[in-house]
Length: 264
Image (cartoon, rainbow, N blue to C red; front, side, top):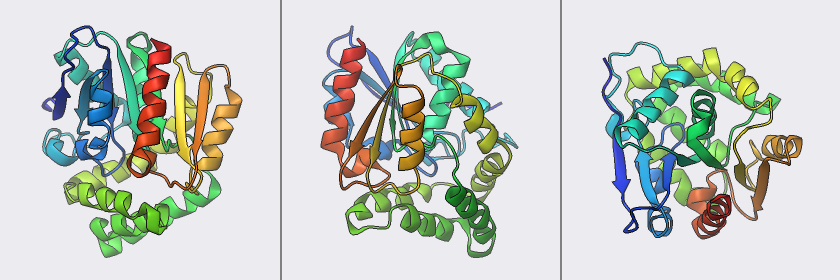
């Protein structure tokens, strides 16, 4: 039986403050959110999650042979249950947006809002080609070299460099076995999960934050926001790549906190 995932807890001095849960992307960890803790912590109780196989959750689900997005979402809800959190705002980056959407499927009544930084909402042709060829390449060059390559492809510019370094450093916690479990899940479930969770109007208010230089995900994020304008708010950050929460943390933090307060 798998263990409780590792998490970081930051309690606000106001016991009645609302809860915000942070969910990282592929290869990430709680350190992904180091630039959010101070600003968000002034307003909310915070819980930061290490997903299965990542960072300090590297061994939490070692005995599980196969992953699914449903399993990962359930494991994340276990932390909320453990902390007796009744309702929560979810803040996610990149692949974490998919985990959040599956969490919404499972327990929509417990989510007050969702904030997605550089979300993955669908796979366009370019991304399909990169993913398919990338998974084959990783078998030849090793997944750590593959992560470095992908980081350079997704975050190619000089102003993306600091975010790229965090992405690569956090991915080092993944073992070969965990990497294979995650990539097997992408191959089997990613496309179908994306089509299911992003195809209909969400019951929960969503704030999307994306950079103008996010050449993989900007177009699909804009398309998703345009489909459901009654529920989704979109912010496009200038001179910024995929990891907006790391590259433009001051803007991201300000806009996201204002959005969550507006929901309250």
